Image (cartoon, rainbow, N blue to C red; front, top):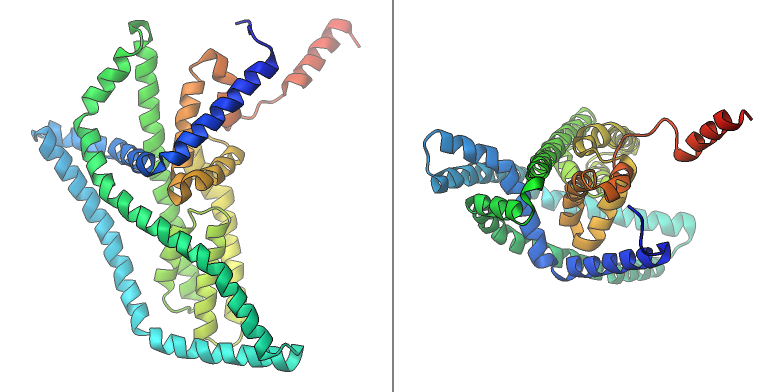
Length: 363
């Protein structure tokens, strides 16, 4: 199709549209985040609801049973973490005492060997604390935001499952009947992409938690399973998550063990695990499920974090996966779909043009 307008006009309109969409996403995040998460959960639970209905249950009973099963699994994970945290809490006074003694020894060492006075060290600590306080406040704000999401999630999920047919009929009716097959294929692929992504993310989390826990158990670090699971959870955050996952076991090892051999081995083990996660698990288990290449995956996860925080990082890849499914079925947007995908062409266009020109001219 011939473009009616020059490139600079089309690019300006596109940029303006992106600005408007970004503004809407940021301003309405308190509604869009729980709605988006609920949509993913509803798509994941839909096969279970359909199976319950085939067994003779009513729609409402099937939805309630599916939600109940999901809640039991979630609470089971919460109970496991809580029991591990209780064990950690019972040793907390001893750990605090050891940490205090270690910190005092470190301050004395800095004063004796580097000439940094206690007064200067305390001043640096005070400045660091003042810098960290706003960050903690922001994290607490995100925590209360997560609580509000937790309240809306089951409500939105139940309603989306209940009004599924109404929503599907709407999507088919707003497009012409000639496009019904394309719409049906798009919806099926979207559902499959989201389900595969969530399953892939779950598998990645289980593998990373297992690798973390096994490594810490071999090294004799206390609370190895708790630290391994926490490391897998914070690993959702790119770059920062890997650092946080490493800091926790190093602190525990420093408090509970003498010397630095264990800490060095923890760093080595976690670097190996992170390498495996970044180059094997994420590209081949998570991202490949929605056919998104590694470069785009990293970019959209970071952008999702800027827009919607932790929830945005989690939603970024399935959201882009849905966009790719749409782009691949609209002729004008197919180049964008190829850019998002993980299929690398043998030749780029310039090389193909050179080969064609060489055959034509014989040069």
